[in-house]
Image 1 (spheres, helix red, strand yellow):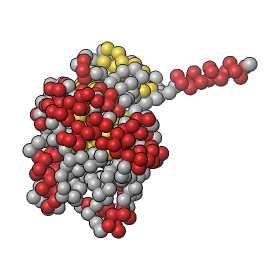
Image 2 (spheres, rainbow, N blue to C red):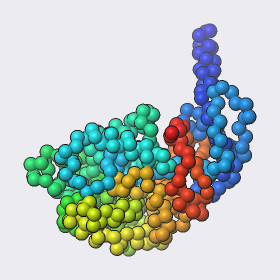
Image 3 (cartoon, one colour):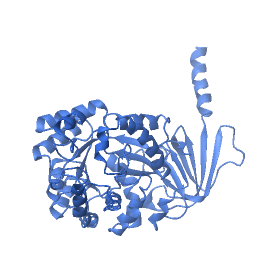
Image 4 (cartoon, rainbow, N blue to C red):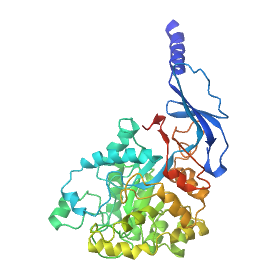
Amino acid sequence: MALCIAAPVLAADEQAMDPVTIIKVGNLIADPGKGASGPATITVVGGKIIDVSDGNTAPSAPEEHVTIIDMSNKTVMPGMIDLHVHLTGDPGGDFWKRATEPTEWGVVVGAKNALLTAKAGFTTVREAGSSQYSAFSLRKGTAQGLIPGPRIIAAGPALAIVGGHGDTTGFTEEINDTLASGYSCTGAVECAEKVRKASRAGSDIIKITATGGVLSQQGRGLEAHFTNSEMEAIADTAHSLGLKVMAHAHGARGIEAAARAGIDTIDHGTFADEPALKAMKANGTALVPTLMAFQGVSEGLGKGVYTPIVENKIRETLGRVGKAVAMAKEMGVPVAFGTDAGVFDHGRNAEEFALMVRHGLTPREAVISATTLAAEVLGMEGQIGRIADGYSADLIAFDGNPLEDVTVLEDIDWVMVRGRIID
């Protein structure tokens, strides 16, 4: 009996001595949709926010296990969410490197880019396609605090049609076959099988290349790759496993078909027109426009970075970049934040905000797109995207008010991910 009584008391004492972090805030934006609320105090224990109070109420003489962080001259808001990154890659047109670099190298590159991304204020990212286990290794490393970086929602290899964007191309067939990831598929049954394979391997989300792409070596167009039945099989199978589906998609009819099939997000959406956006609206599909991707590739034009085939496709898309954003907003299609970092240098993610505003969003809408809305797209709205009791301690501090000027988010002074400060 004595042991039974002592055990809970001991546990309570140990819990009381857990490290506590108290952040004094100059101007709090707990929920961008509700605006700023002035000075506040945030208390963090065990990686979670346990209290948010008005005013700077931190003790002047804290106990030994309490750390005070003074951000009383800064704005503090939830860490940002980027729904489309490629941590394991850096920009460039050297597609042949796939034949010369081992997949393990992606983890090394990814560790570098994870830190850059977190220091830029992005505390959660959706990794939109990588080699079989590189993003999964990074996911585990950042979750355990072994690698400084954001929370990673990882897709692993993308599902593609044979010979399409996302499949291995550009080499002789023997080399293509050797380098292929094993996730290309033909027919509804095989595509459903590949979704199950991705789920078994550890994917948090299913990524498909629903249409042709800009940076692959095929010269053909940017319309639908998968058939309707293949995309329906992918969406239905993923949803039956509790997984969402993100689709790389440029061409209007491919976007429309993907939305009708039940795909959860359309990433890029370059040539989206009214019928495509109506299908997205009807099926609850969000647009992730990745405007920085086009900014990044345009910076490499005429410099020998890309092959002539790819340069032609880049020029084909540039005249349409951003037009879908204003149309989506007008038609009530959610526009969520994603950049395609890796096509441009990691760490520049926040430059996407100014492009979103240029193409029709208000500053407040742009910030919402990377916080509360992005959290909803991930199905994590009760965990991230706000500063509130019980939420993950994902916080950023900076000067200025992003609800009036989004460019202030390009210069972040302090970052906390899961209660850990990013140095």
